[in-house]
Length: 231
Image (cartoon, rainbow, N blue to C red; front, side, top):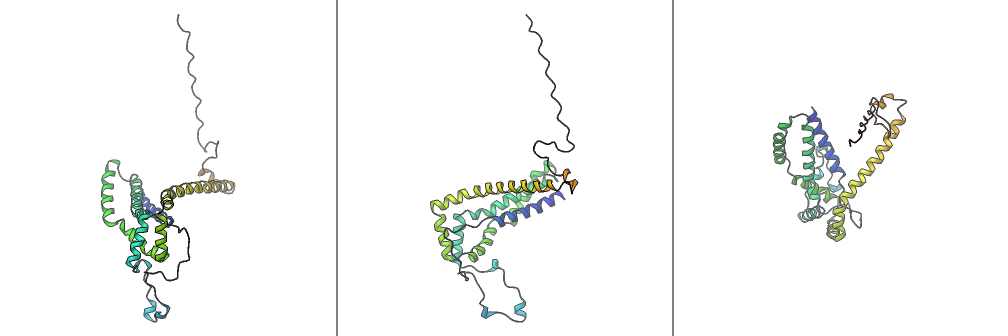
């Protein structure tokens, strides 16, 4: 059960990480046109009726992207290192699975389990599939001209500087934000302790306080004074 919970949690967190991964920002944002070149769209004049209208429209991921635009998007993803997203997610998931499995599988069997998992996982979930899934998303969000402008920016010295520095900036920003919000949440919860006394059992002690039920540290035993030095 612990292993299943850990795996599910890993999948959920990886989904959040992917959803929060920022797309490259254009240095000079422009309003995207309603029709994106290379993406199949349906004209209002071809609206369907009857049984045809009841059929769901094809998903964006199924839309055909113009080959030239697809090649430009792949180049942009390579320049911005977004192409590594699939590998990064797979590595993260494998680590989460290992952490969960360590609570359910004997230590001596864990390496064998992880070898089997990694082998089967790699065979069923190629990292390139993540890149393939992102292509239509970029194609819908950006025109060919905008993609070319992004490539030009990210191939510049400043663009490469952004690619290298932004992950660390985002990581530090998230850490700072989490610390601020955690402090605020703890302050609110401590203010609710009188109404909900059970909170005292789960909240960490405030700075300088001893956790409930914790025994005070024993006084250190004084070392015996050295006797007189023999002459």
